[in-house]
Length: 118
Figure 1 (cartoon, helix red, strand yellow):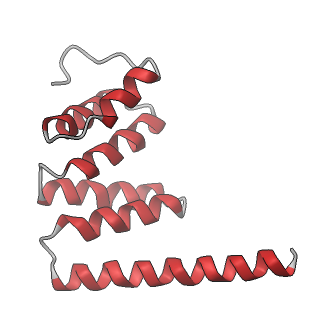
Figure 2: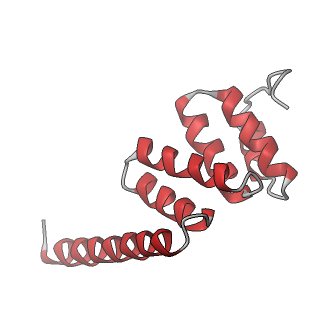
């Protein structure tokens, strides 16, 4: 690995740790706020920690059923896992709260909506 890759890797690691610490601090201050759970869940997904990301995103929508961004992220998680019924449930929940990208994503990829998903 060259010097440039080492330097950028260090900087990215530093920023990741900083972002993680910020979200954990927010969770400590505001444990009922879904936003830091969503942000930390997305961070975990970027770190290839899908199970942790999934748990955090699910916690965000448990705290606020109308948190459309978390539902939209769950569409991606469940879509990749092949759980299309769950993906559609979250796509419709996101859509009901003004976020249509989950439905668009599933349709674009030809994922048929189950008859009993909504």
